[in-house]
Image (cartoon, rainbow over all chains, first blue to last red; front, side, top):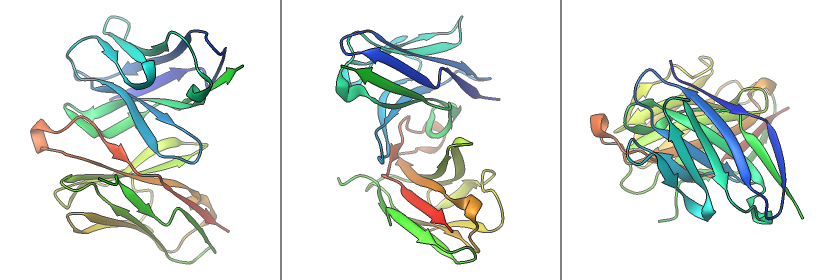
Length: 115
Length: 117
């Protein structure tokens, strides 16, 4: 069975600092992995996705994530945080091989950015 | 395209009343997903349609919940009767699913915040 664990429900960084949001997954089949961002009172927006091609995936807004099969991880990073990055971030795994809408989500990590 | 459109954005209703949430898919998409978001349980998949056919409704919490796709571009999620524990944000998402070789990205609507008092 697939599952996703996000380490840390809340992460706080200073503007300009490195952002690291952690995600570990469990999947019985080759996984499709996703990071979504949710701004207050908004829907979820896809940041990036891993679909078994390159293990280092670049997304929007300067975010990237690296798929590490040996560690079953898919951590999200951004070299320099911006105030506008403050939001909630969700890691998700696809329940079906090559079907990206049927997702299991992690519990989410709220990112705060201090000036 | 305007994206996935949900209505209403906010709904407040009294316990026992029927509630209907609506979703318009992105044009050309043929997979539809209803999710529920609560503080306690996070984001949960309720039901998934492909080509208007319900494929997996194992996440629907109770018989009080029902979902339909009367046509290829529109879906409803109905709760009858509603209860306070149904209070949550309900999202629908659509994707260009191609069955076995399906698409790998779902697009989410803005959500409907339901409050049952």
